[in-house]
Length: 533
Image (cartoon, rainbow, N blue to C red; front, side):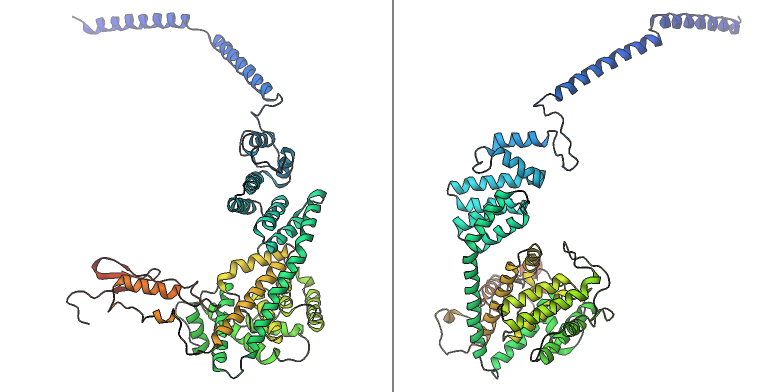
């Protein structure tokens, strides 16, 4: 039997059957033209629905599409006006004691969308104040001011709150001054309110400032009564010398500790692990202070521009000899402050020196105020590439020392406050900076008076409870830790006290009789059984 012929005939029959079935399926399926027509119909229906939604969204009161403003940040699908309206109706209405809806919208248009939360916090603070919850109102006002520090409405109402409820006239007067500084030119009503409030507080604030200066004068007279040959005064001056250099270079970012600073000045030996730059900063301040003490303090005549240049030459002479004692020749930037261009430096520096000598001769300003103003004006001019802050603080102390004050120490822990007051002065109100310098002057005098007082031989009840320090050989770890903490808390509160900057070393016991000191890598092993002491 021929299987090949039979297999070939079967293949022909199968192929014929397949072709006929496929032709039947193709006759039953729609044509490509028909499929295209259905797609077009669905596309037309979709476009019609989209046009309907667009028309509905454009109707008045709709909030499906935001009104785009190039100057705004859009954080939601709603328009800014509608969002503000919703917030007014659901959240602001119980607290809207002074601001109407239009006023709130006006504030937000002036300050931007980010100001909404600040205005809300201010309105809630006003309601808390009306209900007699002064502490909550104070926190809400502080929150609002942190969110919008240049909002004149918040500054005005926060100042009114401080004036009426807290009786902090100094801070209230400062807020009124800032409200005037940031008030829009066209807002006559806000400007008139801030002006009227400032007139109410200005005289009282001046009286408060004068009383502080008078208290400083009394302490200065007590300081001058201390005998010049007093051993205690000599030790206090020596300690203040080390402290001044430690703090003034620390404000600029130097990482040397007080002990390391003292070691460099006394031995002139290098400290391991510290850069040459930090060593040279300390040595430069040492040279500048010696130049002022030996040459300028007892100098007859005016302070000249050459004197300031000589101070600066010694401040950074070891750090940057090329720029030392010379005005900068390029533009610099200091945070948000843009100092004058190099072309104006010589003229401004000459005007500054003329102003300083005129005020010294006229005695129109108190020495503390004059020193603070001299510091601020020289920092504002920023005549040098580097060392402007250190030179300005030295010039401030030169003015104070010529008036009989000791060199004032601005602590490195007060660096943020110090810089914030300089920023505030650049915004138009220099009085907080002057008050800060007055505070530092008073605290420095307190430190000298405390260090030079003599023991009378009498013990108080508190003195009788003082014991010898605990140690790990005689006491437990808990007793040592408790004693360390009590000694640091019980230190006298004076300006030369660095307890606030020192880390309280508290030993934490671990396994295997090992304790580690926080912030240090040294490991101390406690004696165990079998150990010979």
